[in-house]
Amino acid sequence: MFKAMHPTLPEAITINDYIHLKRSKPSTGPARCPACNQPLSEKAVNDPDPAVKAHFAHVRNPKAPKCPIKSEGAIRYSVLTANLPDTQAAADLRSSFFKNWTYHWHQFKKYVRTADIKDFTSALREIDNNGVWKYQNIHEHEVIIAMLATRDFKPTKNSDGKTLRSRWVRFWFRSHVTSLQQFWNIGSGQKDLIRAEYDLSEKATKIKEDKFLDFKVVAVDSTFLSNQDFSEAPRFVHVVMSERFPKMVTPPEPLEEKK
Ligand SMILES: [Zn+2]
Image: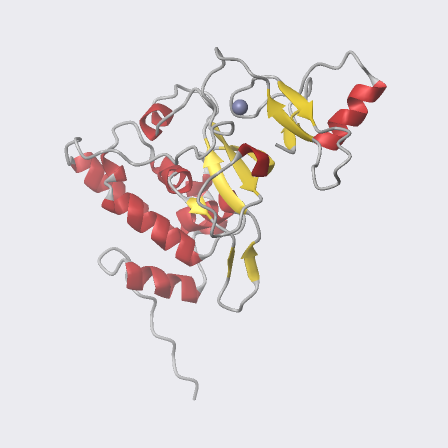
């Protein structure tokens, strides 16, 4: 890990800044993991091999909670609702989501930061097929959280050949939350998740702690469904949505021919 939580402040700190801090103030406590809050140690601080960079690592502790960042190849969360009944509430949530799809699209982009409409439609297709609507305690503003948490946002280029995402992005819950169901059941208070960036190519098959470059703690926004700036989407985005979900999204009005 090349970034972690600052020992005393509610913010991130890079390994190099932490090393400086500790040199100037030796009583500084350890940096902490954003997911499990366990103390981290510094590794390879003065390694003579320039290829080996200084980094944080979890302190060995058999009693520490399971941490998704520490576990090599930690698996993504998945929508598990096969045994839940199809209810009217689930049907209502689905139709409300599609009625408000532009709001969800804008907020999804805000969370991922490097996403296009294809990311949105494939993530939505997957959770829709898996019946995300059947969860009992899910709120409409949290449906896109299921889209974030069940996916790897791999490095990719957009249709013009320009880099859309240079790093692999994965979203993690704090380590005491191990499933979507648990996340929906967190009581009142701010929910958040960790947006982690890994130095992995799109061909990689495993998430690894030593490729963990950067992170942000992302607060779940429960207000965006009333943000008027999100009430529209560009025409091409609308076209894609109506093609992928023809029963749920009507296509935009045809463009008037210029005379
Ligand atoms: Zn951890």
